[in-house]
Length: 197
Image 1 (cartoon, rainbow, N blue to C red):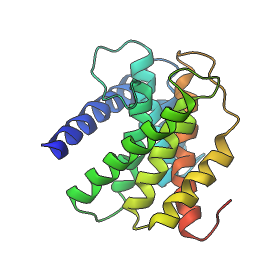
Image 2: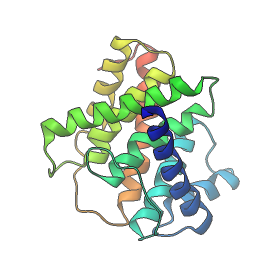
Image 3: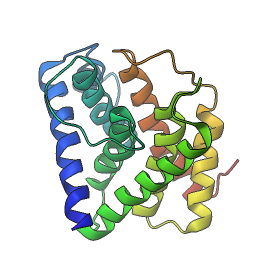
Image 4: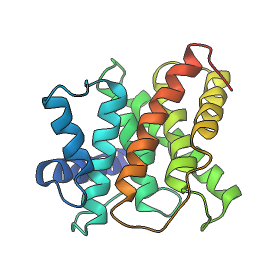
């Protein structure tokens, strides 16, 4: 039942991303990244796919598209960041559905844990620091990392994104979510390669 609930959230947030990518609403961050791939100005990889998927959903959500989002720690954008980078990475791997959904669950748990320490409202961007930490933990788990890799990935992400401030919910959040998503993937990959702050 819990896994089915998580799968429903994956569906909600993926539909938002698909809408944002198709229609280029909001700032069109996701659609622009996709166009840059087609123009061969940037290359598609795990990091870029995570950025495209996550920012496309934020583009749609922040422009007022009437589609539901699964939130995390009480925030829709946190939910997009906690889920969609993991969805993007999963497409590159051969993992079973249960492992994938466990990674999503771990992401939500870490996001909530960090938010418990930063508070509901803070000067820092919760999507970057809290949901980004959740996403990198989930990605590291999906890639087969152990507890030390998870901790390393979270520290890597926190070191990279500690200075991102929250300047209020608006269309520009898509840029921050793109950054958080890409950094979540990179922090996990670095930790698995033994690079830890």
